[in-house]
Length: 179
Image (tube, rainbow, N blue to C red; front, side):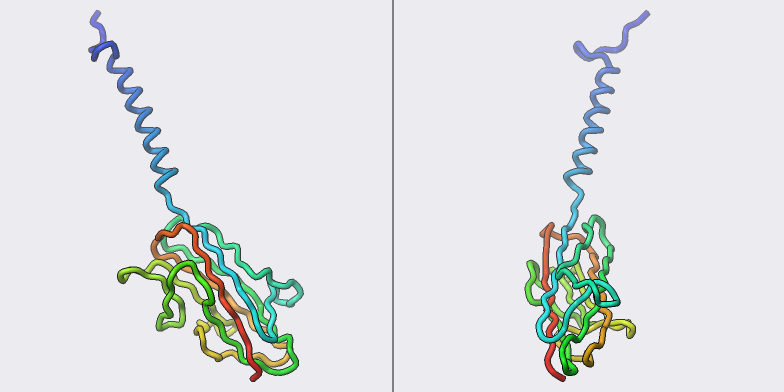
C-alpha cells in the first residue's frame, strides 16, 4: 500500500485540517471585527410651561433620554413615543430644535434633520405629531397647546448607511412661549 502524498513531514490530510481551521478563525475574526454597530443616544431638554411624559395619562415623567437599540444594519428605523403637556396657566406655542449633537445635521425640506457627507445620506431624525401624523418642522411655532392639553410626539431616527463615528448623541430642545 502506498502512503499519502506527503509534503515534508505533513500529510495532505493534516494540511487540509489546518487550512480549514485557519478559514474558520479568519471568518470569525471578520464577523467580530468588521461588523459595525452604531450606539445612538438622544436626549430632550424642556423649557417653558411644558412637561414630557412616558405615558398617555401623563403620570410617568419622561426621563429625558431615549434608549434606542444599536444600529447594526443599514435601513433601520427606531421610534420612541412621548406625551407633551402644557402644565402652565395659559396657552403656549411650542417649538423644537437640535440643541447639541456629536455629528453635523442639516434641516431637510421635509422638516427632518439629515446627516450626510459628500451627497450620501447616512442618518435622518425627525419628530411626528399625533393624531395629525405629520412631521413637526424644527424652529417653527406651529404647535399650540391650551392649558392642560396633551400632544403625542414620536421621535424617529433612520439609518440609511452606517457611518463612523460608532457612537453619536444629540439633544433636542422643546421650548414654549405664551401664545
